[in-house]
Image (tube, rainbow, N blue to C red; front, side):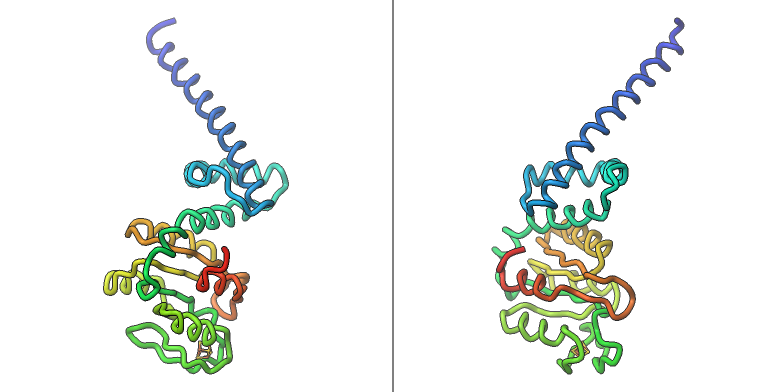
Length: 216
Ligand code: SF4
């Protein structure tokens, strides 16, 4: 066997070994994700989160092969980030925590006006945002209804919040949690129960659990 053949053989073996190791690791992570989803408890939280980040496609493929909903992987990934962040988040003074709500949760008849500080809810009662704003502000949070994704970056740069609660679809939450992590801000994400551009829905109790530090 000449030198070139030996290199090809070595690379081939290395690729096969890498695929086998990735598959086995993904299998372990898929099992941990399944257990976490069933029990609501997180074993090896940080390694599991790193594993989901690095091997998300493999882990989702295993869920798909097992005929399970691969959305569970996203759900558990968000819950893990929340779980890891919550200690630091609740250690920050509440006055330095910001809440960002998506505008799609508003009633289609919302009378609120757009300003440089976001959409200013007037508490008309046509959607749940008014009550959430009242509760959050009574606890000391700063509350924003977000007109677009660039708004959050602008507010972070202007006010430097020390903790963030973000509501949105799963994709927005994942991106938002990564953005906050890159700024060193502990964040908690709450996913919409129905996503979309208008008339979205939220399990408001889940948001209140976070704001009132009940459980999440
Ligand atoms: S409660 Fe606030 S956000 Fe909801 S529709 Fe009324 S003004 Fe708009």
